[in-house]
Length: 324
Image (cartoon, rainbow, N blue to C red; front, top):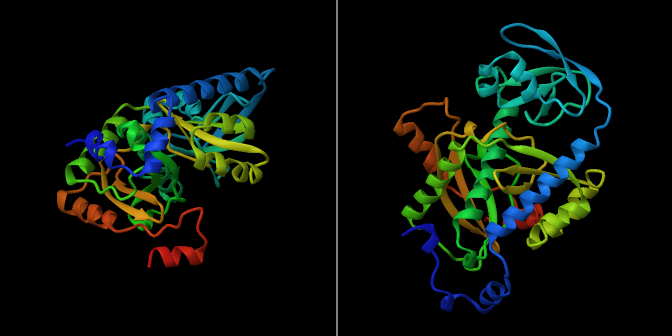
């Protein structure tokens, strides 16, 4: 049995679930394409507004030696800087660090003259890149869940908590028409395989800031995100940060790693009910991290335990009650 057949027949769904299914006019694939098209249109419009090209000085710090690069303000990215260095830098760099303390997406345009370090998973201080990796895994999990389940499942992405590597799992919370759904081992393996296939496509992970109005248009079919957007925008000068991988678009403050290829071995380990939502949990390693079967099995078992991260809709007190 695959995830596509994981749900019971429609006749066994509760009434509200059936009504939502009947009301839906378009498939998620169509929704995804529309969101991606809006992302592309806005990205193109923002680039066109850059106007006169201004040069900035980027002081690269790292191997093989420190060097100064002259780049274009609001156009050039850390990835473009890596292209001036070597193919090795392009492939290995997962995240940039500006002025020694500002994590920056590899494909995000640079705004000012700065110092630049290119971070890998073997950097001396892996904290920033590890958090970006965990956040990216949640983002990719949302993409996999959205495209793997049938439309009849009425899967709606809710959100994922801030990355916490010590928790042992990355997370995405979703709403399902059948909230008591429990996956079989084979279905979890199917999700894991889909995640690995998505990562292997080596898709760039793109960042874009958009207005509240555009964000609401992009996510108009998702009631959760439509509700979250005004609050997110209010905390970010009216802007909402969104990311795209392939045709999948989602909300996150970032940063994320440069490409899906930075996710290697991966397991979707467990599914847990959390209030009215369903929490999907997984564990992954960067492709350069090779560990034996026994050690990875320990990580998988840890990822099966309920991740205690609270939902954005919960207070600290509610979290303790729901997860007690």
